[in-house]
Length: 357
Image (cartoon, rainbow, N blue to C red; front, side, top):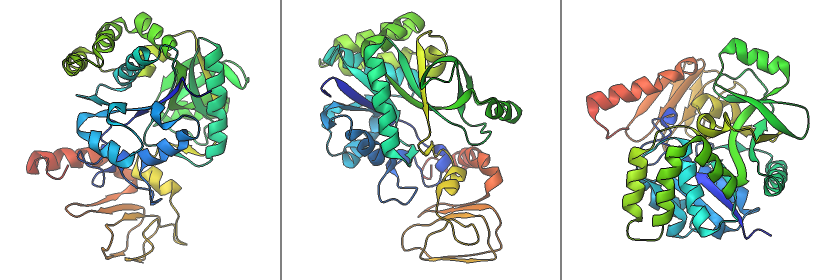
């Protein structure tokens, strides 16, 4: 039975690390950065649609992206889009969805997923999600999915397991360790990457909000009572204006004693940077990830190039660079310095306003 199973897609991010392709008007989740012919959010919907019927999806996004969501996911009705007036991290986002679902279906079981991840082995992934859903349905558990690490990554959160069971109780969470600690985690074998995918009964997560984030519980209980009434929009505005911005990991998962993880390997990446796109992209014999047509590379190695369709580029003498060209912005940056993209955005915004952001 799938009638009480729901999928919540979190799709409110701006994706600044993919500037200048990702913009405030059309951020990463609505783009086909990997050249697959589909946007990230479309891939996410299709991945879970084989487990959960389309009418049981909710998408939480910024109000300005509602029409974009409906454009990319025409199977959904407008009332399936929950519009945040402002971004407040994942705990308020999940609270908004959970309290909305609690009113619609008190027996709901939720899968919560980011909108912009890459998963290569989808059948293996769905088998793990089914296992998590069965476990969460039978237990008052807060479930998450862990990924076996392949390198000492400092940009991900880590989950320490308590044993080597298929589903293990979580010992602790560690957010974005330094390189030395990440190497220790990799060698230890007890630590897994935190995918940011969660599974639980709606009653279980609401009880966790009540216990660990009581201020969010109070605010979003008000949203629940107002859902479907003329007062709903104003109550949502008030809740997001007053609630503390905090992640679900910090706010609940690190504090709760009923957190479990199912670890697996299924070709996962959060595709969070141009560097991670380079890792997954098809490359030529010189290790360049570039369009098959219109891009002429000379004495160029280990670089990633993104061009608008129909644009011609001739590039010579680059080693390990990022080149991203759009209609109004060209960015050329060493791959090792892509953390400076935030600085580029700030300076462009300061000098030229938000037209190019």
